Length: 217
Image (cartoon, rainbow, N blue to C red; front, side, top):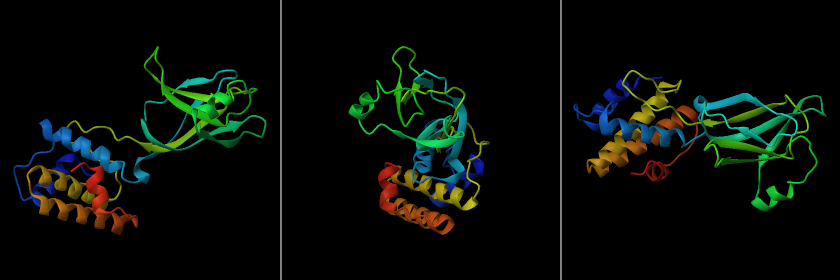
């Protein structure tokens, strides 16, 4: 959980430019862009959250989707089943609009399918459940990867508990800035180092080419 100013020090060293700034101006915007992309590379445990703030209301199909945390990828959703000792039952995304419409007139029950959409009237992201819930006060459990909050200054920290993953982010970020400076060989080297560091720290594989594509170099 390094501070952004500490990441900046690493970037300056790796880029071999002591005047490289990442904590303000356009460089801060670039840093936030790259950090969001970096977090989206893998299902990091540090950015996995389980939210239980929502609960069902009998006869109600739609619910306001949580905005804090802001999920960028839902790994699973479950709802307690009032007819089966409150056990959690999986709710899956609608496979198609046709499958969703087929449930429109289904009898109220424990939901099996969900959709997310932005409501026109309120401009709010909405969770819709079908069949419409039969029971009230049943917890909706959402497990997923959140979008990291943006850095606004050098004192804020990443959410990574492993210093090695902070190092990997610093290397990837250096690769982006090296590419912007026209130093393609150094950019490629940094992505290779970042890829290797992720593998050494987590056992997970992500190739430098995939990193290049997803970080938009």
